[in-house]
Image (cartoon, rainbow, N blue to C red):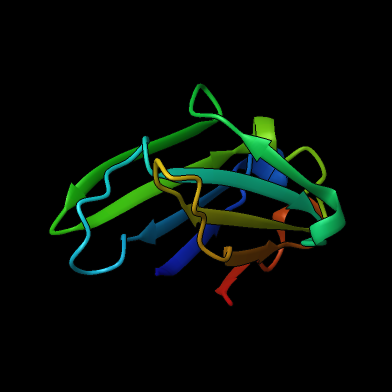
Length: 120
C-alpha cells in the first residue's frame, strides 16, 4: 500500500526527487530491503520498466509507525525533465511470490513547472 507521494523538481527541474510513503500489508513480518523490489518507468509505461537497487539515487528509511519513505532521485529519473515517470514498489518473499505493482506517477512541465505526483 503506498501513498501519498510528492515530486520536488529541484532548481529549474534539473534535480527531481520523487518521495513515496508506503507500508507492507498488515499482519506480515516483511521488512525493507529484503522484501521489496523497486522499479522506474520513463513516461510511466510498463514496457519501459527498469529495476532499481538501493544506493545513491534510491534510498528507503523507516519504518516509522509502520511507514517507510522511499526517495527516487534524479539519477534514476533521467527522462523526467519536462515529462513524466512512474515509480513502482512490489512486495516479495523468499518463496518467489511477488505482489502486483504499487504505482505512483510523477510529472512536471519544463523547468520544473507544475510538479505533481499521484498514487494509482
